[in-house]
Picture 1 (cartoon, rainbow, N blue to C red):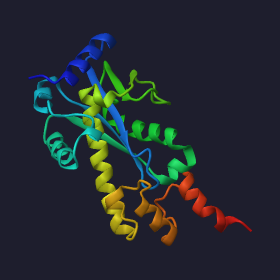
Picture 2 (tube, rainbow, N blue to C red; picture 1 turned 90 degrees about the vertical axis):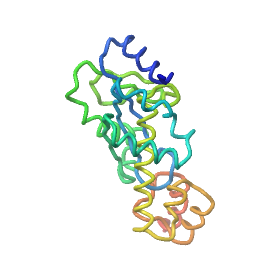
Picture 3 (cartoon, rainbow, N blue to C red; picture 1 turned 45 degrees about the horizontal axis):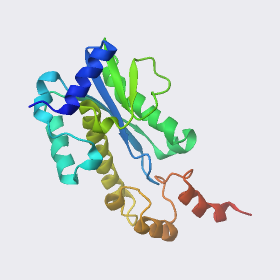
Picture 4 (tube, rainbow, N blue to C red; picture 1 turned 120 degrees about the vertical axis):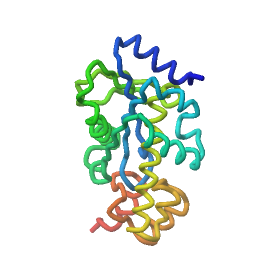
Length: 213
């Protein structure tokens, strides 16, 4: 059985006249803390039948994402991962930091000729000469993008669990940096830690009184 998502990728290969489809997606644009993480993923056609259950990471349970992440790691699929830190997000803005993470993720594939990047979302990656095609809702249409979304999400979740140990009290392992009620309460009690995005309004508003004369 072949996934409809893989059929989409085959059609994109025909339309772009490229031999290799590399999906690119990110995780962590919305949280108040932690990095944005991008993944670029290539699934060989011979391995596509092993991933008929791959889907947009947001539609999968945490248990299923972890299972697929392990299977992707031990398969013939290839992927690169890139991070952009909270400091880089504050310096560049979240969109440009996302592009930075994506550029870092695709370095693994720079040597592959006649390839095209299928990028989730409406925008091509800025500052990149490689052939690319933005795909709105690509993580629900493309096998390569969906697989990239899983790797990016699980990688970021694991990273936030590490930050939870480095900065106890915020429950980063639980909410992954999103602005939950528990997170906002911890922010008010403890103040921002070095992993908080100071350019994001909820964090910026908490900092504002402290910088006033």
